Image 1 (cartoon, rainbow, N blue to C red):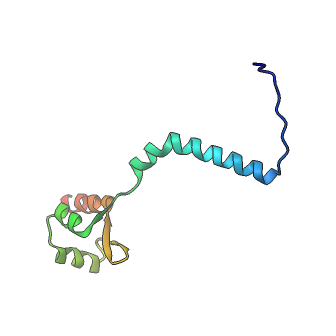
Image 2 (tube, helix red, strand yellow):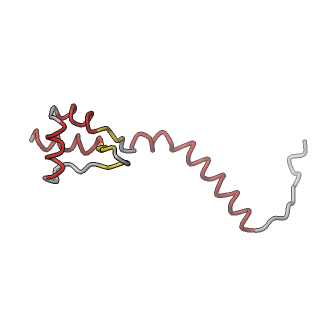
Image 3 (cartoon, rainbow, N blue to C red):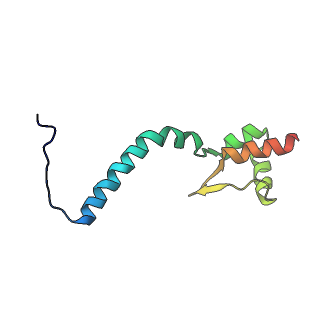
Length: 94
């Protein structure tokens, strides 16, 4: 095989840009997806959050009303960022 062979193709600049973008995205995703997953904030249910805090669902509602914990609503589901629960526990233990 001739390693000095050159392939010449003709394509619009926008198509070339799209191909480069796709290739770069694939490489970045492959290399950094484990790190991204590590730092993404996991959402937990109201029940899981209550269990971690050792409180009832009603207390969770009261914490929300007082602005101490802010849930994320996905449809009818009430979810909490796990990091928010950890931060709340850290504040209460100080």
